[in-house]
Image (cartoon, rainbow, N blue to C red; front, side, top):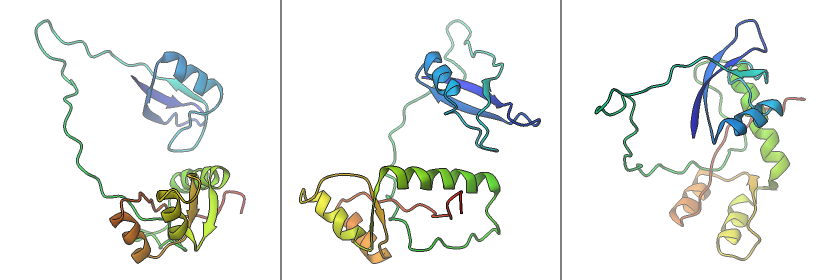
Length: 165
């Protein structure tokens, strides 16, 4: 994996951010196809920024050497709600809304909507009674908790209005 410092040239601000890619060719092909986007403005005119390599002195470990640590068991989020709760800190920033709209479009494009039958369909897929595929829909907190207790992975995502609405 290669870590790049990137900059967005879609706007005059030239937002800076980081990205990890399999190799240089992977970054180049994704950037050329417009699939690398700025997390601040969503622009796709992204270039590698100048960066200094981290080379350790002879006999010393690298300053930022990665030391593998055991990954803690993360709680599995619940399926998405029927209506997204209001943000406690006020209105959703535009760049966050744009990213959530992209996420919604990807979910709608690649997954089947099962509505209020989400918990039942997830359980059927888990038990091998139904074809395994991406699904989305609604489930109560109690249904989501029951799925988690049975070892069925579910995720809840904020559901914002689509970009074209």
